[in-house]
View: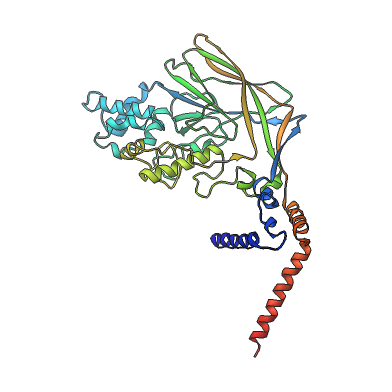
Amino acid sequence: MHIKLSRFREFIEEIFDSSSIHGFPYVIRRDFHVLEKYEDNPTVLSVDIVSYGEFDRPSFTICTSNYNTTAVMGSIVKKFFGVEPGDERYNESVKFVEQIKATMYNTLNLLQPFNDMPGVNDLNLMDMAYDLFKDYPTAGIQFAKVMTERGMCQSSTTHFKWQLPIKSTSPFERVNGTIDRGDKCTSLEVCRISVTPNNLDVEAVNRIYINSYDEVMCGDDLDYVELAGSSIQERHVKIDDIIADPNIRHFKPKSRKCKFMDEHQQDGYYDLYTPNFCKMSCRIRRALRYCKCVPYFYPVRGVKFCNMTGLICLSKTEWYDASKCECMKLCETTILTKLSSKDQNLQFDRMLTIDLIFPKTRIKRSVLFDFDDLLVGLGGSLALFLGLSFLCSIELVYHIIEYCLEMIINCVKP
């Protein structure tokens, strides 16, 4: 149907463009046409004054590498490989489990040496990664343990439930997880947030990703802080709030160049939309296209998770390249901008402290050119180039249809 309408439009444009009737060629020229403004630039960004407002706290995702698994390693090796210390396969099994602990989106190639291990293709790798991390201390009640592109992490995003690992005993049930994000911050107070990873594990390296409250972390996000040893970072962050006029929902996302959170993709794997969820859905589709399976760190339903052979297959492709993924911004969101940061080194302490700075203004996405403006513009173009009003053109179409119907009725009469 879309192809037929497109051909009909091309046919009309060709007739108008080659017509010798004065004004017809101008009607279909896009640089003069009001349709271009209606289809491509119907919205505008403006600045709105904020006297008082409440803001959700940013979300943090803490991904810990080199964390200590000595206490659980023996039980995990026994559960998945059926071997105990002293068995000739034990050391090799420990190396494999350690590699799964460190595996992320860009290190799948490091699994190649384990491809010939007996029974390795039958292992539930998501279950193994979760068992390694499930007893690791969290940074507080505002964090839940989630599966990300960088392996098991802990996150405070409002959408953490979409990243909870799927239970090995049921393909339709996720592990339990809850968070308490605390109260919102107001623009009339200084809002200081502290994130304290586990300080007892001195060898661990913590990478803390910072996102808006309504976004999840992607493995290639660039806004993060790395805390190793004894280090503290203080950061000042400015919040810019973007709101949208409800009337812009009448336009297609392609026209307004943004999406609302409830406008999820039909071919996506999440029931809501954010730019990072869009990127992850795109990567899932690319993984399925290349190797017919999905890495275990995407806990989504309705897909086949890769075994060892599938992960090594993906390591030889560009499945993670999201440069061709078309992911729009959110129409309503919060933008975090780092203004300054200060590092300190204190013994036996690791912490990220953020002071939120609230602006006096916010950005509002409003309708610039709606359907009423389109009708006015079309009427003006017809009057200018053809000396014809929009109402007269409707009457002309009506009389043509009436005449055709009368001719048809007269033809079918006996």
